[in-house]
Every structure is written in C-alpha cells, then in structure tokens.
Length: 196
Image 1 (cartoon, rainbow, N blue to C red):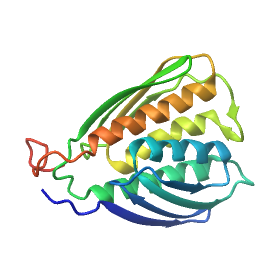
Image 2: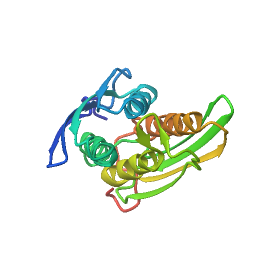
Image 3: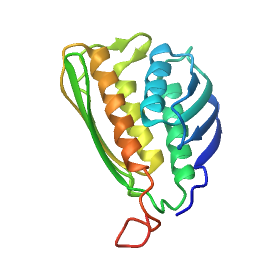
C-alpha cells in the first residue's frame, strides 16, 4: 500500500467563472474558500473540515447574473479534483455512510466512489434563499459534486425545521461519508470488475 499524498490542483476558466482549487485528501481539514457567496463558502469549508481535506478554492463568478454558475462550477471543480486525487481508486474503502445532526436537523449521506455518477439528493428545503444563495443551488452543489467525482451519492435530510440547519447537517454528513470512503484500506481496486 502506498502512502503517497493524494492531491490535485484544478483550474476552471469559462465565460462564467474563473476557479483555482487545490485539494489534499489526506489533510487536516484546513480550508480557505472564497467564492463570493458567504453561505457557499461556509458549506464548502464545512465539507473540507469534516472530511479532513485540505481545500483552497478561489472563484470569481458572474454573481451579477445569479449564484448558479458559481455554485455549480465550484462543485464541479471540487469533484474533478477529488476524482483526480483518487486516481484509479486503488486501496480505498470505496463506500461510506454517515448521519450528522445539527440541533433539530438530522441528515444521512451514503456514498460509493464507484466511478459511476448518480446523485440522489433530497434536502427538503422550504426557503427560497439562505443568505444570498438560492436553496435549489445548494442541492445542485451536491449533485454536481457527485457527477464530477464519479460517485453515487445519496443525501437525505430526515428531519429539521431550520433550513440552514438542514443544509449544514447534509454537508456534514456528506463530509463524514466521504472521509470513510476515501480511507486507505489495502492495496487492491475494491471492485469485482478490477476497475472503478
């Protein structure tokens, strides 16, 4: 089993966003995120912290349009970095699941780093916005992350009255599930196919 650091650096430049991101999977949870959207910064920092990923992300997006491009592209860049850092996905646990509460809210996340993207995200949000970000964009962040990371990701908020708490519990559960799934576990590719 190799103990080489699993890391990636991604740049994404479009007419809508300009992103520079660095990721170290085997980190300490140190994050430095600036997207121009405060609540998105909070959620991506939360994800990095609890997954124990070192994450630096800078995004300049077309926020004069709305939050969608910035939220989506940051998630795509993070998912791409995660996939690149994992490489052929040899020696990982592959599967992870977690529950995370935040006060009255409770979320469950289950992930399979299968190489086959499939997001099933149900946050059950009622508000139109949290801070300056549309709540539909927060669901889309988790969907886009799963697609770019080539992961099957199921996230459900099981209870909760406060939408801030519901979203934060969902991101924390996702982080904990990711932490379990990327954990080193042997030296083979964890698939009967021999490839992920």
